[in-house]
Length: 298
Image 1 (cartoon, rainbow, N blue to C red):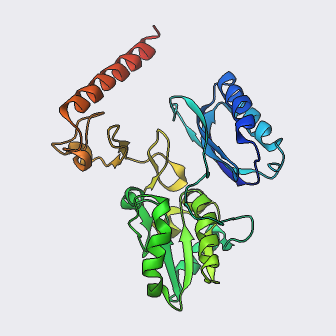
Image 2 (image 1 turned 180 degrees about the vertical axis):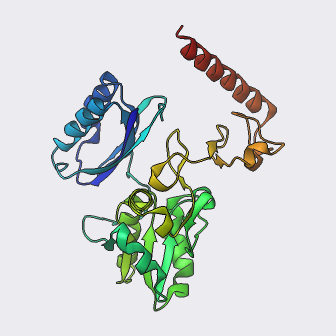
Image 3 (image 1 turned 30 degrees about the vertical axis):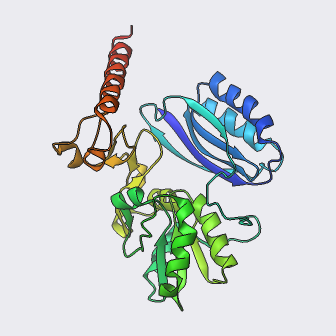
């Protein structure tokens, strides 16, 4: 059983490159897989491994200056949710592309999962999903506004074009694990919006803590690992990943005539050349061989 730890923390990191090497070496030595992003504003990512290995990496991160109060969310998977370990340097740990955004200075009011239903049911509250369009497509909260953005960097322009829709409304925002809302609520406050709220711990914490019979969540939640999606109780969902375009594919989508595992889905049919598709097919063949060898113990 793999322990999966999703984490982020905003704190000044003056020399991310100095942190990158030792952190990557520790993860690899302990057999930890996943992805971590380092930037001058902090750290973000998801890692998976044994209980002891994850504890060792989290202890290492928390020992860094400014990271002692790092928090994370855990779930589990029977299979490896990542193929390898990546520790990358970025300009931002979640890219919004707006100068001066600083979640350490001010964010919206945190709302605990147990209190979220009451807030979003209020008639004077507008609920905004800050995730990308393909994430929203497979699940969201009842009545939530979908900005239909392809990337988080498009959110400021969407808000500028639509802010009048939310005149005299309180704003409640949510995302997968909480990190995008740290920036989006800071951004709205910089735009003069005072009553801004966001779901503490994001959708993942809500699905973990709120019973299905009391839930206002509809569908599944996209996650950035091999599980692809999760449902209530963070149980693995029914979606698979199209390894060509990276979009989630439902069980019905996998029955579509255009679907070919590892090669294409209905969403990306015609988006790649025949040479690309043949390359994808070869990759799929190699993956199948690797799984066969692993299953035989050879």
